[in-house]
Length: 57
Image (cartoon, rainbow, N blue to C red; front, side, top):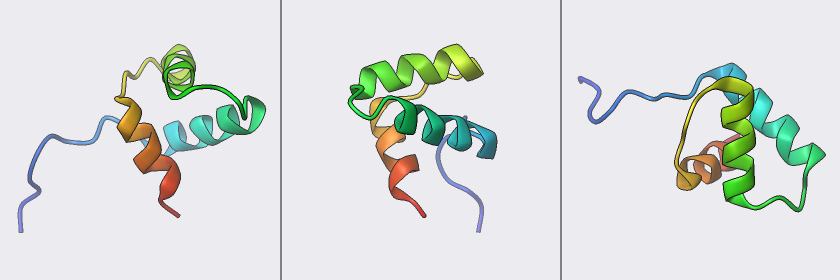
């Protein structure tokens, strides 16, 4: 079956960066985490995407 929807912008190393950011800034807002992720990787993602990425094992 073909993939539906837009291709994912995030990569495996982006998840690692996001996990490190959340550990180093545990009280940061979703918007702040999104901005930090962009500063480190150059990728803009929606706040809901951050929640989805972090909730997956």
